[in-house]
Length: 225
Ligand SMILES: C[S@@+](CC[C@H](N)C(=O)[O-])C[C@H]1O[C@@H](n2cnc3c(N)ncnc32)[C@H](O)[C@@H]1O
Image (cartoon, rainbow, N blue to C red):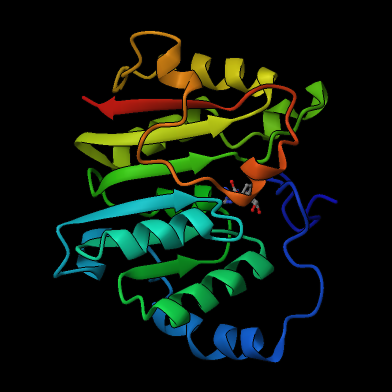
């Protein structure tokens, strides 16, 4: 069921489901407020003054990819945005278990948050298996739009990179059309294998493992010019 609270920017799934465990409830109450994002416009780099770069993951789901990245790259600051409370809570357990000090989380719509970020403030962005909205009449709800691609290009620093993945054929075409229209993003692929083979640095996500799409996953990597 789409979130009825958001008419124009509807979210695909419910933003929360079953009751959280006592531990997760405590983390949402105790840990999340301290690692959230500021209100209003902000510069992600100012949140991580001792880190060399800031990376963003949009729609991190259960957080497997985000947690793996943050654990591996302790010299990098990470921002994860996800509306689904269960996913946020799961990521909070990974942060606590891993003693991760380099992650900030926002529960909500990434489009609203990205708009508030400073220009050229991110080194990497991941949009992995976003909600596919497979029915034609729902395509306009997809997070990849010309407007959002322009925002992503704006917040990426020159030389920064963006990765998009999907296993839904119509979204593969939809997304590449919109990314290709951006004058600021250059697709790094040279041959089909470059997008059909998971990149060497990729961590498989939970959604990806379920193989729910109608096509083999593709991974589109872009560089900000
Ligand atoms: C199909 S799941 C994939 C999750 C994860 N990336 C993975 O691969 O396992 C898509 C995720 O995007 C989230 N999402 C949907 N709309 C969003 C939005 N506007 N901003 C940020 N995340 C969003 C959903 O809550 C969901 O967790």
